[in-house]
Amino acid sequence: DCPYNLTDCNRIDCIPADGMRRALNVINRKMPGPAIEVCHNDIIVVDVENDLMTESTTVHWHGQHQRGTPYMDGTPYVTQCPILPESTFRYKFTATHAGTHFWHSHSGMQRADGAAGALIIRKPRTLDPHGQLYDYDKSEHVMIVTDWIHELSVSMFVDHHHSIGDNKPPTLLINGVGRFRVFNETTEPKYMKAATFNVDKGYKYRFRVINAEFLNCPIELSVDDHNITVIASDGYELEPITADLFKITSKNTSTINMCNNTFYCWFTKAKQVAVLHYEGAPDVEPEGDPTWEELHNEGLQLNALNKGEEENETISVAEMRSLQVPHKDNRLYTPQLNHISMKMPASPLLLDRPSPDNFCNMSSISEDCKEGYCECSHVLSVKKNAVVEIIIVDEGVTFDANHPFHLHGHNFRVVGMRRLANDTTIEEIKAFDEAGLLKRNLKNAPLKDTVTVPDGGYTVIRFKADNPGYWLFHCHIEFHVEIGMALVFKVGEHKDMVPVPPGFPQCGNYIPDHMGDDVL
Ligand code: C2O
Ligand code: CU
Image (cartoon, rainbow, N blue to C red; front, side, top):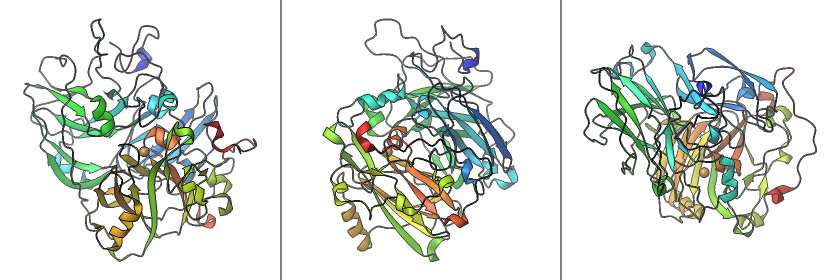
């Protein structure tokens, strides 16, 4: 057995994760990385020491808005210079958004190789409208779930071809461990110990579940013989909704099944189990391979606990299409936004504050970009305090993937979402909207910071641009953001933005890369 705290790990014998040997990229020799658990409005100080020999890094505090400290957002080339090897950077910011969040590396594919951990921000029970729904004094559980491949995720760049490539994660991990067996292997399978969550009978427990989704998998969760009530998402309270989930008989030791419902992970039937262990019950490991069960395909309808206020506001509309076009020679399909593949600027926008002539957007690109491949620094400027509506359309051109979109620096309301036929175009959806058929729910639209866009469908979100700065908006699939499925919102004017503190690290003065996409 390998403890998932790798500090205790004998470097030669220890096989972490699911027992399949591979290289990792971890923080403090732990996977998941060290949890940060603080109280609401505490100040968090983290010194990040980059001990990677050749890669730079940054850390993003997913779900925190960095109001007043936009330069602590951890987005390389947007809010800071990457932290070079053998260098240190101190993050210091206020934990303004209570709830279950996570931190992760925002550089390259490091998150997919293990550089992520929980970020739990507690508020007093009296301030939790759902404080009565769980036994507050009982320990609560944090569950980080990820999809998992058996090699360094940079290998996705070698084989990733959405139409034929084998880029589908074969398995999942729960709190960094899992059970996996290579099929057709003649030797006895070696099962790692499943993650275990201890409970006492008769209490209601709060589980904080984080899908750190390294690569491609939305995840479904069920607990044998138990119901789950969903009370919050992305740190925002919801109308509680109880899911009637899978039941497989077992006494006292229940199995927690994780599986998922989209093509990628369905294809490989990726699944994982953990153990819900009752105090006093014998220690039992699940037997055999985790079984794959198809759970809810449609998901749950989430409603915000508090009503929206946007009905009377003026809306500026930023339309956006997300689609895939073949890259050169059809070697690689590149997800783009409005025909643009994001090329990061040579130095951080928030430090440099360049003139808009350096940016591109849908109205400035050439017609050719609609057919071929274009990359540039895609920045959309929005007025301070504007309510911005974004219709994100997945034209579902090439393959089946739901893209989870994340907005930095703000939350948003999810006012619409629908799955349509696979090749529905944005023109059709616009016509649909003009005919009044694109319905918006403004009443109890859930507040979120990340939302999925169904394959061949649309999601409509609205956010109030009240946090001046440069903020990334991107697909949260690690591979997709790395190959350009991102853009930046410039919120407000430079005069509205908090100045970067004196002595804030600057980048070097290398000549910017003018080679475009040739390097791919
Ligand atoms: Cu959780 Cu831009 O990321
Ligand atoms: Cu994506």
